[in-house]
Amino acid sequence: MINKRAILLVFVFVLASCASPAKPNMHNTMAERLDRIAALLQNQATDKDTANAPIFLRQDDTPNASTDGQAVYITAGLMNSVSDLALALIIAHELGHISLGHYWSQSPLEQLEQEADRYGLFLLARAGLDYQEAVQLPIATQTPHEKVPHTHGQLPPNYGTNRAANFRLVIAEIEALKAKGVSITP
Ligand SMILES: [Zn+2]
Image 1 (cartoon, rainbow, N blue to C red):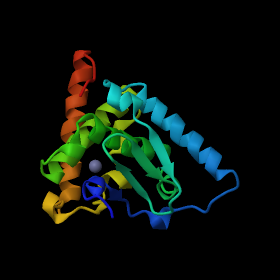
Image 2: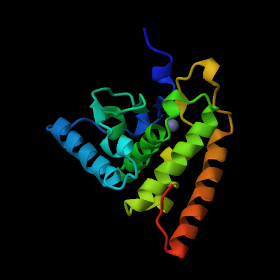
Image 3: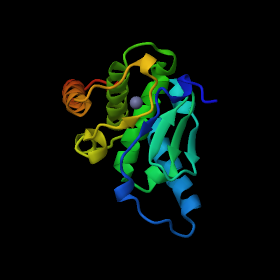
């Protein structure tokens, strides 16, 4: 039986149409790619939970990213579907759920998502990645399908629009910190 909490923060990204066919050596290459991008972010993490969170590759063709509050799970299907920058944004978002203790939170789902997006953009900025470009990617503007029990609420139909607005606010916040020359810390 699936624990309800275990699927609270699971996202299914609708990117199947972008998936590319598997290639020889894909598994090694894929694991190395995941490790490289995760390390880039986790080296910049400001707390131990996030810095040390295991990032697991799941052999599953469904594009999906999730966390159980301690580790991040990225499917092969997702890795086949997105660029390095999109993958960084997704991993950073999931690390945000871990850092902020969302797995045990009863706050509304949209609030959790916006907080994780804020944390994720800060982490991208700290890692020197192009957060301005990242929020323009399809992955950042679509409304993800979610497997969420009704007791934890659902994302509103206009979530994609709200998410884009939240990204703009966070970018303004980051730009203001950079202008002041202070640390970009969420
Ligand atoms: Zn999330």
